[in-house]
Image 1 (cartoon, helix red, strand yellow):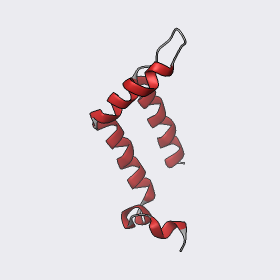
Image 2 (image 1 turned 90 degrees about the horizontal axis):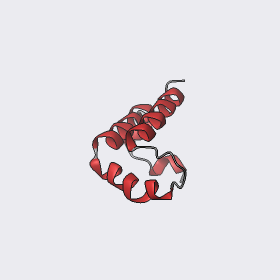
Image 3 (image 1 turned 120 degrees about the vertical axis):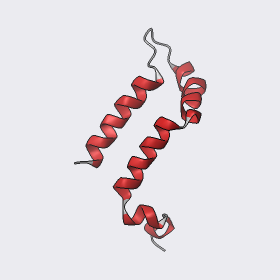
Length: 69
Protein backbone atom coordinates (compact mmCIF):
# COMPACT_ATOMS: atom_id res chain seq x y z
CA UNK A 1 0.00 0.00 0.00
CA UNK A 2 1.48 3.35 -0.98
CA UNK A 3 1.18 6.44 1.17
CA UNK A 4 -1.02 8.07 -1.45
CA UNK A 5 -3.65 5.34 -1.22
CA UNK A 6 -4.58 6.46 2.28
CA UNK A 7 -5.32 10.04 1.18
CA UNK A 8 -8.86 11.18 0.39
CA UNK A 9 -9.73 10.93 -3.32
CA UNK A 10 -10.41 14.68 -3.50
CA UNK A 11 -6.84 15.36 -2.36
CA UNK A 12 -5.39 12.92 -4.88
CA UNK A 13 -7.42 14.49 -7.69
CA UNK A 14 -6.56 18.10 -6.84
CA UNK A 15 -4.02 18.48 -4.03
CA UNK A 16 -3.39 22.20 -4.57
CA UNK A 17 -7.09 23.03 -4.42
CA UNK A 18 -7.51 20.92 -1.29
CA UNK A 19 -4.58 22.65 0.42
CA UNK A 20 -6.02 26.05 -0.50
CA UNK A 21 -9.34 24.98 1.03
CA UNK A 22 -7.38 24.09 4.17
CA UNK A 23 -5.94 27.60 4.25
CA UNK A 24 -9.47 29.00 4.04
CA UNK A 25 -10.55 26.72 6.88
CA UNK A 26 -7.74 28.11 9.05
CA UNK A 27 -8.91 31.65 8.33
CA UNK A 28 -12.63 31.06 8.82
CA UNK A 29 -12.81 28.62 11.72
CA UNK A 30 -12.49 30.45 15.07
CA UNK A 31 -11.10 27.28 16.64
CA UNK A 32 -7.67 27.98 15.13
CA UNK A 33 -7.60 31.56 16.44
CA UNK A 34 -8.48 30.23 19.89
CA UNK A 35 -5.76 27.56 19.74
CA UNK A 36 -3.20 30.14 18.61
CA UNK A 37 -4.13 32.43 21.50
CA UNK A 38 -4.11 29.59 24.05
CA UNK A 39 -1.04 27.65 22.98
CA UNK A 40 1.24 29.66 20.67
CA UNK A 41 1.03 33.21 22.01
CA UNK A 42 2.00 32.20 25.57
CA UNK A 43 5.24 30.67 24.26
CA UNK A 44 6.48 34.04 22.95
CA UNK A 45 8.74 35.71 25.50
CA UNK A 46 10.00 38.55 23.32
CA UNK A 47 8.71 42.08 23.53
CA UNK A 48 6.82 41.85 20.25
CA UNK A 49 3.76 39.62 20.19
CA UNK A 50 2.64 38.36 16.79
CA UNK A 51 -1.14 38.45 16.39
CA UNK A 52 -3.08 35.61 14.82
CA UNK A 53 -3.93 37.82 11.86
CA UNK A 54 -0.28 38.64 11.21
CA UNK A 55 0.89 35.04 11.68
CA UNK A 56 -1.85 33.65 9.45
CA UNK A 57 -1.30 36.30 6.78
CA UNK A 58 2.39 35.50 6.53
CA UNK A 59 1.78 31.75 6.59
CA UNK A 60 -0.88 32.06 3.87
CA UNK A 61 1.38 34.20 1.67
CA UNK A 62 4.22 31.71 1.94
CA UNK A 63 1.95 28.70 1.39
CA UNK A 64 0.34 30.26 -1.69
CA UNK A 65 3.74 31.20 -3.12
CA UNK A 66 4.78 27.56 -2.83
CA UNK A 67 1.48 26.14 -4.11
CA UNK A 68 1.39 28.49 -7.09
CA UNK A 69 5.05 27.96 -8.06
